Length: 486
Ligand code: GLU
Image (cartoon, rainbow, N blue to C red; front, side, top):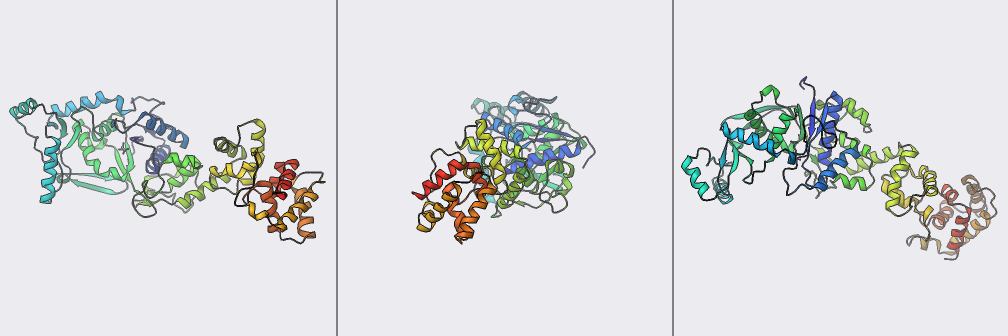
């Protein structure tokens, strides 16, 4: 890559929640800026006012913050090249469009949608490349006057000269586009609003962006952007460096979309994935650190990220791998970190309200489940038994303790636990092993499953004796007695 001080930008159009592909791009942009000691610029491309909403813009900002992808220039942070919302820069685009018109790089096109459709239809029939046929390129003043008299509106179109555009993509190598397939394109709609190609190119120049790392789906818009740079008078050595990141595919090898996988980052957040896990996993989608490690921290990513190590072939999204990484990241949390990630899930599920005593009990219980869960959303179900006011054995488990054998086990446990002086997990276990396993000769799985159901209401719970300790003697004995009389 070039030796310029790096400025790399992430420029989403928030027409919905940011998805896996967007965030993979944002992550690579961020990591590249951090690796090079450059600037990470965040710009909102909201010129399509029919599809971008304020809520989605705010959600995009929140998602980046939540993931820890902090930016140096952009919304909320500011910077010397703002505003960073394109909707606040419309006069800038209008001025450049006018300059292009004045210099004859662009022209007004009066063709109606019906006429354009007729051209496309004729091109389809003749089996030639679709695109604008240049009808309005050289209109005479009389023709223009006639169109205006008809009351027609006009778009601004960029004149694409004959020839080719070649640029070096840092991932794909030299890429050439023949302009026969890059027809004159619209810069400004008839209502005066700018199109993506105009706004993105003008902003990359004015915001002094040096590197454009973005999804492969935008590869074909590059020759148009380069045409805008030319019309702005930018010297070729000052064009940004391009690197188009490989597609992210679903398990079925089709491009990842709502259809073949969960794509919204908001969904992963709600489902209890940690931002570090998402970033770790997405970092491996199309990039590798150079060895086969799968657990990397954000600091390691910044240290190791280079564009040379980005693959050119598509990456496949693998939910199982993301789950495994999330489980690893949960296990690596300190108990205080685990606590603060878990509390919102417990509150949202209505398990706790957040009193000090509840929080203290959650904190004592978390070590019991840290090894056992893959997502934070499992925490409420795992810990509900400690807090429930209306305890009941779950429907699937109730029949398993309804038989005479189970009642016998529970009665014996009740009578042996009742006199127990110290209620800690070691004493509980010793008492139960002595009576149920050694004296009654039961298999541990049978004896302890019955007790687990009686005490926690389910066959799935944190470790039994520790759970019983946390529940406290009184509650445990009550629940066992209740199970006996079920
Ligand atoms: N705003 C464009 C999009 O979200 C991306 C702009 C770019 O990276 O060039 O698709």
